[in-house]
Image 1: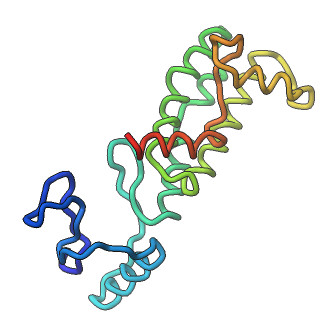
Image 2: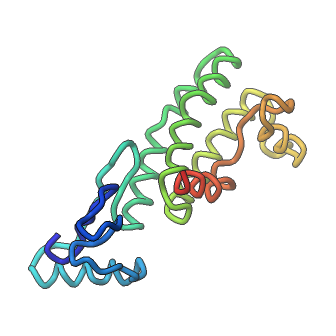
Length: 178
């Protein structure tokens, strides 16, 4: 905060504008410049640089590479192995759609796509593994048409499992603009 990193969010400051740093100057630095400043401030005050993220409302917040690792940990903790063991195929699909996909969709909406991409690709692979198991179809027999049908919405005759990695940019932009 003493270096101008504290922000007023949503409230008007005495000058009447929003999102102004404490030193009341618009901050036009790039992310890499801000990270370099943060690292220099840490070394100047003999503090270790940030080594992990905090999770706010289910999404990791911190340095980009740390966010990416934390997102991967969150996705790996989802109960994919448990879903694969359920005997009922319909239950597997319903639980997959209603639990794991929604949790990862939250990451796609709240994290920059460049940061969340690795975790979302991992999620897509795990979802595809479970769906192929339900369909009793080996990955070697997966055609482009079948993959398209898996990703189509239920209302259009598909299974409703769209690729989060492919739609991450749209999800994030929709979240930022709302």
